[in-house]
Length: 200
Image (tube, rainbow, N blue to C red; front, top):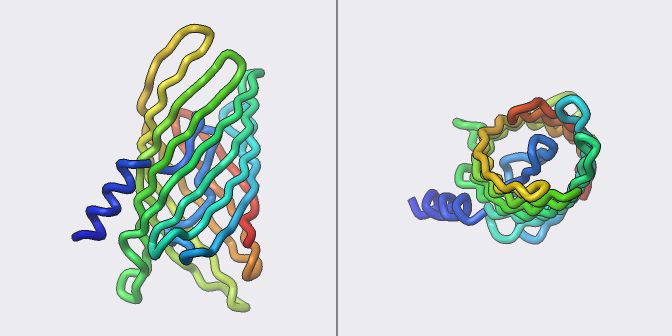
């Protein structure tokens, strides 16, 4: 019960990612070990003309708790947007033989700046993953999540806020011990798809 309460607190304090539909998670529900770090770089296409470059770094803080930071450059509707964000992820269920699934709560904050545009975003949600064993000892980790995205934005002197539901799903393919190929799709008003590498 205390683990569930702590997970809820993490979700309320912060979650993962967001500028419009052009950002992804690109990681599993399984958190990394305390003190371990990894990074990643990704290319994301969204809508008719959205294009994003994203980089992130993540670190295990304590058992079952992971923190991350990201930088995202987006080109959309002939405008440039730069987003800075941070997040926390708490794994409140660890995979077992009976139920081979990890479950995490995620929460984070993002600030976006662009051509006469600023936005402040909070994303709350959950993430699950599993594991598929391949030949030669390699593994594939499918994952998926449901996110609630709260955005307050100002553009050309006009301000507004909106709440969106985002569905995300992806796969982490472990190429080697220190390198993984990641692909992800996201549905939030529009469809986006991204691909990149995670490395340790």
